[in-house]
Length: 185
Ligand SMILES: [Zn+2]
Image 1 (cartoon, rainbow, N blue to C red):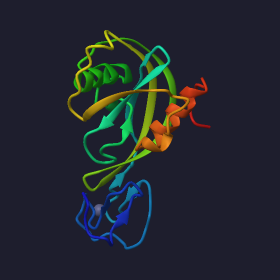
Image 2: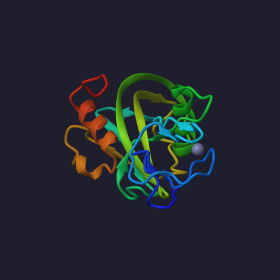
Image 3: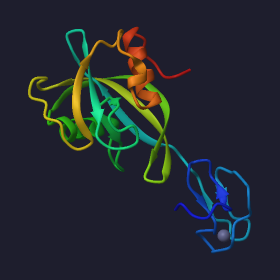
Image 4: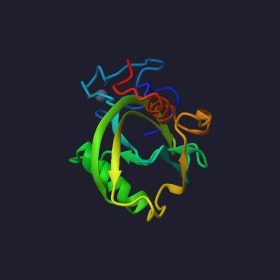
């Protein structure tokens, strides 16, 4: 979807030089959401993608992952990922914890929500990240896979938050450290 620079910019990191509906060249410089073509009426609502992440504790320590891939490869993160079509947030969490850490989720409770920007392979995704406090089957049998290079057990109140590569996870961990729940005001 990344195309010429002179198309309609959705503000979502992808633009269209030509209308996907009728092929007309789009006017230059406009920034609109929804994207709209006056000629054929093509309209595209650029909604956010849903994503989930898990806050998992062992005593006073919080589980952080080390990102294997860009963006922010090598930096800290929370386990999680995008919600697939037809999947609930809880189902996405359980799937991601199985894929990334090889563990079963035995319980979860909603914690907070935070918008995020996630640039990936030329597309900038606008997401709404939902954080849950999760329980897992075992904390001593974690095996890293998929997007996770390694794990760290951190002190949420004492960690250097700049080590977290994504703004939303940085915010979630700070919020978790002070015991506050709820979405970003
Ligand atoms: Zn059109």
